[in-house]
Image (tube, rainbow, N blue to C red; front, side):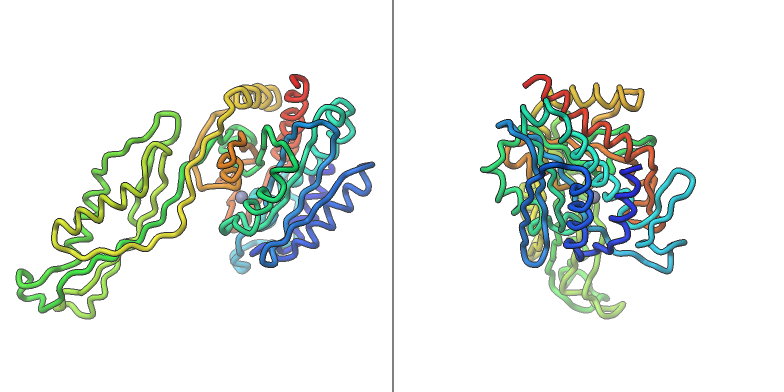
Length: 379
Ligand SMILES: [Zn+2]
C-alpha cells in the first residue's frame, strides 16, 4: 500500500526539531518522480528550517493540503521498539510521528498524486501540498512564513490539515476551529518578614490564593459554537527560603485555552486589578498568544461531513478541542480551514510507542481526495 510505504520511509527519518527536512523532501520528490508527470516545487528556508510546496493544476482557484513533518522528542528507553524504525503489527504502524502527523502527511502525498491524474481537477483548479516544519514549536519558521510567501501566488479557497483529530475511530472527528492558547505567569510581590507575625507583613501567597479563587469564578464570555474556555493553574512557586519566612514573591503559571468569545488580555487585566486593589505588586510574563480560530465556510464544513460519512459510515463530530495547529495561519488570513485525520491520543501522540492504524491513513487519503473532487464539481 502506497500510504504505508511512504509512512515507513517518513518515520525512518528523525525529524525532531524539524531536523533532516532535506531527506523528507527527497522521499516526497522520489515518490512524485515515479508517479507524476508534472508537479511544480518550491522550497523555503527560515532559520535553517526547510518547508516545501508542491503544486499542480491549471485553474485559478486553489485547494491547499498541508501537514507538518517535524515530530516531538522521544524517551527511547521507554519504547518497545526503535522510534525511528517503523514496525508494522496487527494493522498498525509504530514509530515517532506515526499519528502526529507523518501518517496524515503520507495520506496527503498519495491523495495529491492521485488527484494530479484526474483531468477535471487538473483543468479546473490548482492543488498545493504544503509540508512544513516547526509546527511542534511555534510555526513561525514553518507554516506561517511559508504561507505568507505563497498566498499571493495561489488563490487558496479551502485548506485541509490531516492532524490526528480523531477519538474512537479514524476520521470520526473534524476540527472546525481550535481554542486559543495563553500561557500566563503572574509574579506577585509582597512584603517579607518573620512568619510568627504575619499581620506585620504582606504574604504574596495570599495574593496567589486570591488569583486562584478568582480564576475559578471568572466570568467567561464564551460563544456557543466553540468549546468552553478552561483556565488551569499548573505551577505555584514562592521564593520563601524557610518555614518561618514570609516570602517576597510568589509565582503562578496558568494554562488558559480560550473560546474566541473570551478575551485573554482582559482576563490578565482582571488579575492585575485584583492584586493591586489588595496591595500586592504584580508583573506578568507570557508567551505569544496563539489566537483562537474558527473555520469560516459552513458549506465546506457541511460537504466534508458528508464525505466523511460516506467513507467511514457514520456522521463525524465537529470539535474545537485540543491544542492549536497550523490551521490557525490560514484562518488568520481569512482562508477556510478544516482538520481531519487518524486517531490521536488513543495512539499515544507525543507519548511512547506512538502508532497509527493503516485503516485510518487510508480513510484520511480517501477523504482528502474527495474533498477536492466534490469542491471541483461545483466550480
Ligand atoms: Zn501535529
